[in-house]
Length: 166
Figure 1 (spheres, one colour):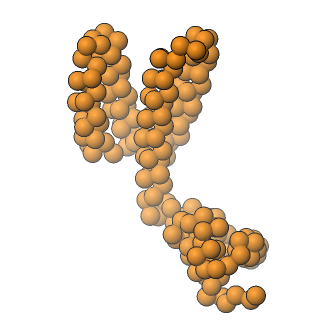
Figure 2 (cartoon, one colour; figure 1 turned 45 degrees about the vertical axis):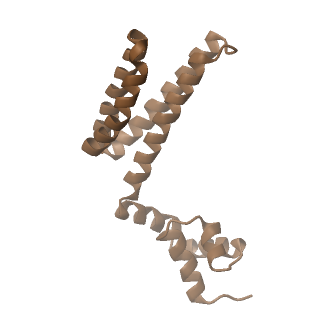
Figure 3 (cartoon, one colour; figure 1 turned 180 degrees about the vertical axis):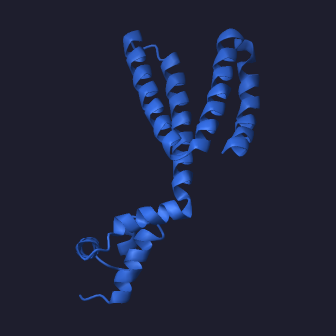
């Protein structure tokens, strides 16, 4: 079935401007995914690189910052959840815990380094959130009786830090 240029442009717009997955953009226009892939490939050969246009749109729209901030927040939460789970895991040998912690730290540091290069202001947020995390860890270790209270206070304070630096 032949599709109109208008349909092809709608698939491209969904992919580039709406940041939809190519499959989703194709489905939205009732176009087979294979056809959308062919259109994208043909366009690239003709000098219209949909991926470059999409990346430029992300940068122009400021969504790259949003994506990086969300990614950092998810990584921080998941790192903390993993660390908490490892602390209480009785079936995990200490050497495996150390190896997992080293891997987590390496991944976390690489992500932060990339974010620093792309978004210097997020570096400030990372440092601030790191200090908050250090305080939480310090209280849990040295004043365990206050662990729940500090966690209760630091959660809304984390939002304030994000507003100030994010």
